[in-house]
Length: 422
Image (cartoon, rainbow, N blue to C red):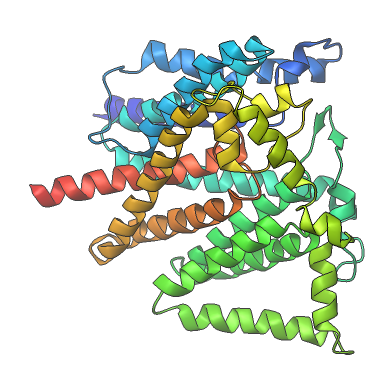
């Protein structure tokens, strides 16, 4: 019995080590292979293959027969990834495109094998949600520590947006821009807010501190997409948390009153507009910081291969490393109409699972109610963010955070239906 218990623990730890390997690919890529010389450059070069190593481990040691009981977002996005891999052959740089499309497939296949090879997929998916929370918190903690001087400059009076609007490197890799840092902070603030409702009293102070500090980070970064997503997530919580809505509303009122307290000249409206403009003129604001031009070029690119697209990172490769800041146009240029259909189907299935489970959440345990609401705020946040940014359409932080939530929703709905049918 002891040997079986130890073996199951080892298998569990090893499984989530694979998820950490996937995360370890963030902020690296095959460009690191060009001319590595220092040890840190070699390390980053090796990191770019971690997801592929994880896939090989899964193929060698995990059952290939593990399947979800019903179609859901994970299967839909796997099909989208396969289409992107196939269409990469039409790219100007097919190997480069295939590498990025392959990362997408690696992530989804490893995730599926991790969750379905075991006695309790639901418990595994809940653990994956927990691990993803701590990894995300760890990322934002490291970024804050490294860039603390820029973030804390001027505290409330000065924005940190200008410090993070361009590319910066630390230990040989680029760090997130303001929108990326704000994304981390907004996600953590929403999850921390949810956890204040479900944690023991001793932990409430910790989560409230995390929530307030991450709100401060979002404020400093001036990322409009993150701000809108954060507002959407909080409104979602107000709608579904009947017994805690007053607390949330009181918190929001307190934040607004605090803002007015730092504004003795009653110039709040002017300052708010100035804050949202980020120093931009009317033309820059009207073009969404140049996004509309990228959208036009992206649409022209989509028409070159409208059915199956041009493969992974098609915008970067074909538009001289320009990035299309819209999820759905991004899926069109990478996977064409066919790939986009499966991508959107996956997102719709995730929302369908969320609405279904919210309807019956009173029948869930407290723990699974907490994870359900966490998955909900994640889905709300990234669905809103999907319009001014790319969320889930290619390998990256957004995809990893979203997948943990989508997989949890899919497995929870499957098990809920199965138990009620029997």
